[in-house]
Amino acid sequence: MIEKLLEYDTQLFLFLNNLGSPTWDRLWLLITHEVTFVPLYAILLFLLHKKYGLKALLIFVILVALMITFTDQITNVFKRGFVRPRPCGEANLIDHMRFIAVRCGKYGFFSGHASNSMAAAVFAGLMLRPYYKNLIFILLFWSAVVAYSRIYVGVHYPLDLLCGATFGALVGFLFYKLAQYNLKRFVTT
Image 1: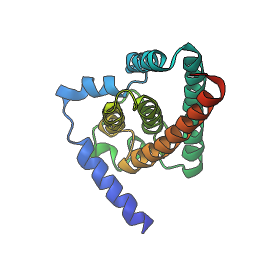
Image 2: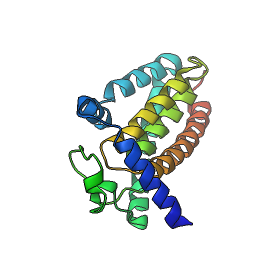
Image 3: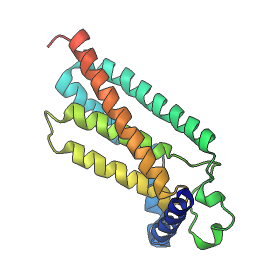
Image 4: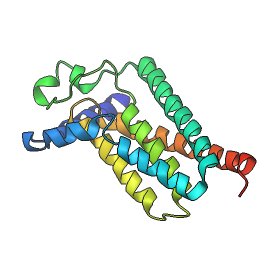
């Protein structure tokens, strides 16, 4: 059963990865780069400050730093625990795929990009939902684009992304609840 699932995962990866073309490679390499979305994070922090104030912003910054650290470290635990090679590290796949990433890395289950971007999207989207009702949908779409970029550049299978995004959504929701608790406790409105 697991072998069949992994076979389907590989087939879907090859299909999606091979949809790419040199025309779009630079865009997807930009999307997958870690610092590309720093301006987005700055805008989200500005919106949080605007709606909740400076004291709340300090709580948000601390919680987001903890959330990203937690998500990133648990991702590494899973990668070392499952030791599933990335597609770019599979000798039998490399001739059938497009690999355009700067480096391959060793293990890929599950994706840190998918989990971190989804955690940030869920956290910020839920915190700002009372003020910007549709922002969460834009952030979820952004997270999905970031996740797909990992297939495009050849470093993750679809299941790596699905599991990473699911984990990230749970963590984002947990830290949203922690933020609500801390706002009630430390910020007088």
